[in-house]
Image 1: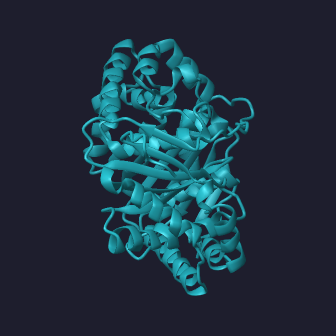
Image 2: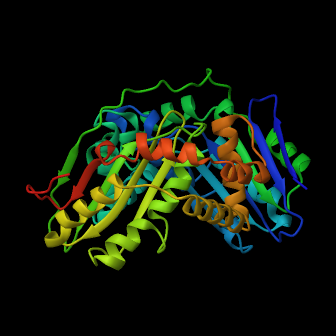
Image 3: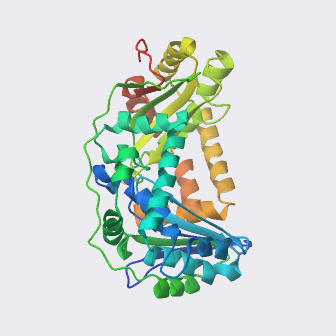
Length: 411
């Protein structure tokens, strides 16, 4: 039985919930459909700055009171910023739902944005950026977006911002962006676990009173991929590599065929890339495919790292593998079964259910049942997979990003 319910309140806020009878807890998230791609380039990182700053105190609670009210009862409170949304979420026991949502709503409705709080959080974010820059994988994927979509594409903007932009964001910028972007028609509330939909809607109706904004629609941005992008990074023992191309938006007809193809190619130890680059040739420790679907486009790629002496050989072997792809019926059937199993296992987690439901509502305007999702994977045809292989997984479609500059590398 599907215990999913959805309501659009008079305020414009979308509320969705999934009651899980066996759950001992509930996860609630508030998603605002504004992220790093929606920012002014000179104010890059402002969405992330706001996400941090709402926790520095509201008109009703101090910074410590916010966290203590949740954590003292064994709950968990956090937030995140992505390229297309900002989210605040809690994981609590059912008897704490009213208090927990009151705090979430307080963060949305009544952030203090004090000068002192903003300056302290600016210092924290600058430390986070430094930590980010010390992580080769994080840096690589940042530059991979620039390679894939072009330097000027909104999806290429840094979610955290950089030192210059974060330093230049002031209190007036914060308040103006929050007031304009955190509007009721951009707010989605999602919950999964031991939760009653009517109670949740009542809470949202009483606690969320943000104004309605203008009709929200992102414009498609021109993609200008590079063929190659090498970035110098001192003191690295490995070269970090991504091969990528712009792929499909969330509702694209071939999205599931790409998931099946990516699973065969680079998901887990049984994948073709792992077997070739690690097991047979010993060029890498890890290798995998990655993909992400957005409102108007997506990204698909291959990731690995290796030492300088094996870099070109690893690239050559990857190119040869891509050029010779010819998936069998057995490989496709196995990939489908693996994807279906992964989805079923992931849905034992209430947080995963909560996020899946809200993503469906944000991108599609409706949430498909789990059975429908599994059916979509099962119905992927050999013809669709062949279209993906021939038209997208051709090695010439991939752009190369290398962290650890190497002037001699080729693709």
